[in-house]
Length: 524
Image 1 (cartoon, rainbow, N blue to C red):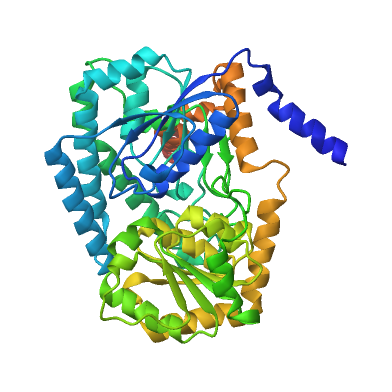
Image 2 (cartoon, one colour):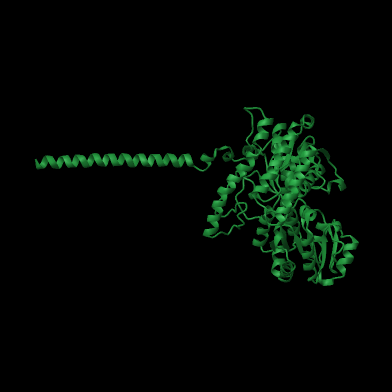
């Protein structure tokens, strides 16, 4: 059996080893920073370690990616910033966006405002002849983009190079032209699972039409940018660019995701962020030891929530943690903590935590997370049950899957009350079924014959070796929508049927008139 796996691994990775020289790869990070940047950073490191020459094109905003200044990176970075006015406007909008979600007033209008600002920033970037010419002169072999920011597709199109894309969130946030039977594939923001009753299927169908219109509305925001920077006659259509990607990588895994139809150029690589486990620093070991077999709870709510946590939320969470018999290690910037507030005796706060190493610790009992996909995949890797506190809609979608797979529960940030949160945490810690489900998910995640990094590198090398992925793309991606849904065929069959019925009616009428004429002649 071991020999079979060795042959499989060799067959999969051999094209990469056959490349005569390292490829020049440009990775384009999203303007939204945070986990988006961390994912592209990991991709860049993996490809660089594999022997390729990697350059990251990065929009640096320190309030979004504070991790950048402290990182040691092995690849090259080309950075850029929009004008000061646009940066201030974006920061103001981002602050408003976050406050709205914390108060439960998030919605499509806020997403549209963010996208409008990204469209303005994209126009700023494409005007920068110095940057665009510099990227063109590098003559990259392949571009690796993060799909959340549509400007990345326009940059790839401007450079005229083949590109692959990675989805940092759930599949359902983008229309890639994949077969998506709405009877069991939940549409984004439907908050459904793959087990739908009649009313669930009705809701999902209606949500599908709404989602399609919203996608067109969001993509149309970039129309002015496209008109401004691409000559008439060769202007790309954003929805077509999505289907132009050679490969789609998905930052998820079927340990979390519902099973659904895929095309050959769609590859799951969930777990890329999971690194080899290192010993936990001594200060954390000493703290964990105080609570013996009770163990500890890890709390990390992501970069955005950590930056914008209100005092009210902090106090409610602190009170909830005080009800636990476990120790609590909490990623929370001490500068956000009021001097008048008293930290619970069983709580330790730090502005940075070795999250992956703590999740692998044998005495961890629970992970309290914001529901970001990277964090969920790390928890699944180590079989840790979760309580999710979501802010954004994509996080809510992730946590729907966590609840459906029964290795965690969730609640909204606006619902945070000490008593509610304490009850949720105790429920997951004390009910062993959550732990069992988390371990089962870990077995699924860890039993793949290839690691996420091996799948990523293997498929990238395959694309480079075969000069594209035409052989992996379904012809349906090039068909107009009326052909994909057989509307022309149905119309033809309808016309033939109606014509046949009309002709039959005419013939019956002629026969009836002939019979009536024959009777009259007999009577005469």
